Amino acid sequence: MTTIPVWVTERRRPRVVIVGGGFGGLYAARALKRTAVDVLLLDRTNHHLFQPLLYQVATATLAPTDITAPIRWLLRKQANAMVLMEGVTNIDVERRVVVTSAGREHAYDYLILAAGARHAYFNHPEWESLAPGLKSIDDAIELRRRILTAFERAEATDDPEERAAWLTFVIVGGGPTGVELAGMLPTIARHALVHDFRRIHPSESRVILLEGGSKILPAYPDALSEHARRDLTNLGVDVRTGTLVSDIGPHHVAAGEERIHAHTILWAAGNAASPLGKDLHTKQDRAGRVLVEPDLSIPGHREVFVVGDLAAVVSKGKPVPGVAPAAMQMGTAAAKSIRRDLEHRDREPFVYRNKGDLATIGRYRAIADFGRLRVTGVLAWWLWLFVHIMYLAGFRNRASVLIEWAYSYFTYERGTRLITGGGSGGVSKQEPVPGNW
Ligand SMILES: Cc1cc2nc3c(=O)[nH]c(=O)nc-3n(C[C@H](O)[C@H](O)[C@H](O)COP(=O)(O)OP(=O)(O)OC[C@H]3O[C@@H](n4cnc5c(N)ncnc54)[C@H](O)[C@@H]3O)c2cc1C
Image (cartoon, rainbow, N blue to C red; front, top):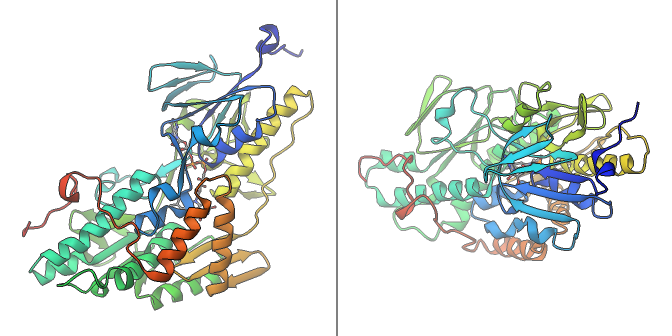
């Protein structure tokens, strides 16, 4: 027996609630532009964030406004879409409502959950304040603050041991984010900051990349991972694979047999899906991602879709990676299924189209994997630049990113080296202040 949808009996348009204005949520909303539905997009922030360039904000190359845009502005021409800045705290799939931090309930006929992921600290939540990760624009500003403050402290201290600890940067995790951060740090230290200090030479800085597995960039073929490792080593990065972190304190990292004296520790090691996935009461994988049906809905609830980093999806027999193009494709696919429902057509299974993987190493190097075609070095870096500029399409600041980039890349100019946030003097409550301060 077919049940008549409630919006038909109530003679109104179906309400689609989208949680999250990242890649998955934004692309879902846009794909519903010409569908006879009312869209409500909820996000706890007011902006869409281009996460792939976050490390450039963290390393003071780009400004936060270069990689963000208000969600409201991005959807301003879409009459059927409304945006509210509200964090979702609960989802009740039986009553078909989402509850927000503003204490409101929003009823839906369709729900697209695109709340993404955060960092995971492998059962050590106490490490988070000592070794912050990089997911949001606030995280990037915090990392930038810690990195730039470290150089300031090194300049100020008379104690050589303290100076060395301030100039030691440890990055935990050799995935793309860890590699990108590790590649940029020697560059800003050696070139961008070199003339700004009197007592220290920023080239005295050490960058140590710790990876628990046997190779960095584990998702890439061995030859490309090895290439990336060589590029990082040539930049002066101390790459240590097979090295698990066993302890992090305010002034050290314990890795393998060694206790590294360092004040700046950055985390790029693990992901945990948004806790909202639990509210769906369906199966999740170890990272908390929701196991979805081929059409991205959840079992027993055809009206609830999960997309992006929060979804555990298999396409062509392989798990779909947590990358921006996958989230965009899933958002678009969920919107298409809603449209097909309204047209009384069968839904289609989601198929992921991988156009290639790219990772940068420092200012002019990258690796690119397009299946049979593999590219490394400067050519791969130009490809990376082109792809990222293209993906910024729809952002008002695409041109400004390009100009800013070109300017800082070719002149090593001051970029956006402001120390902001964390209270006066740029020191947060959690941050270690050594003896001579
Ligand atoms: C540092 C970094 C570098 C990356 N580099 C690359 C790269 O080079 N190439 C690539 O393809 N991918 C890259 N990725 C991965 C890519 O950014 C993600 O796969 C993609 O953003 C996932 O999209 P999403 O929509 O699922 O989640 P997100 O883009 O994370 O969006 C989730 C949204 O949900 C909102 N939200 C979360 N919880 C709530 C709540 N309770 N209530 C309301 N709103 C909520 C958040 O504010 C956010 O706007 C990178 C990721 C990071 C962190």
